[in-house]
Length: 251
Image 1 (cartoon, rainbow, N blue to C red):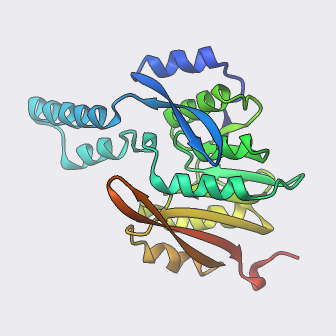
Image 2 (cartoon, rainbow, N blue to C red):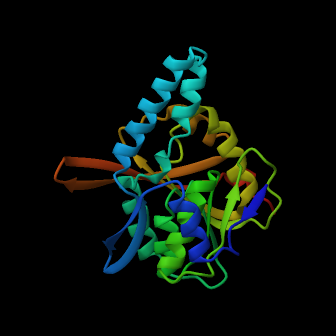
């Protein structure tokens, strides 16, 4: 199922966001371009407060199961953190030539940082996520950076994909949940144009062998390690270029 957030104005989006979160706009500079990035203010503190609140409610009621707690933990706004691989993927997209007619889909967009930056570089990008709150932030960030015509849509990988396939699909840190591996590979197979390319970025320390076991059933890939240095040390990000195997390309 695909739902669009395109009709919402910045005021409408901000009203909905600020009814739930305290937010701030931070400047982010990458590859010579400056973005305004709307984020949850003090995200770590917010997450901790929600965990403590859930713990207290469970103790007070005595009814909350461990499964209930895990469900709520999984639905905390982890999407609102700007992970390091997103910078690598955004930088990569900024270096790609703009090809007229090439349609790009960002999946698991979170704040929409990569998709908005790619749009600012001239690419035809559609930004997607499954979480409604994430999509509100994506729409706000698109509007804050003058990308009002960038589609922001809700996509559930579990649902049949009925739209026009994309020439490129990009995503950062979208292979963290092993329960979604098969679902994601099937989605890529359905949503990617026959000769299209998928570009994924992830932290090298995140071990995902089962995802690649699923992936190579239909796709082949090349990988490249990118080293990032910062105040907390060195981090390696893996960048994957994924294409269909020759026998799986539709004629």
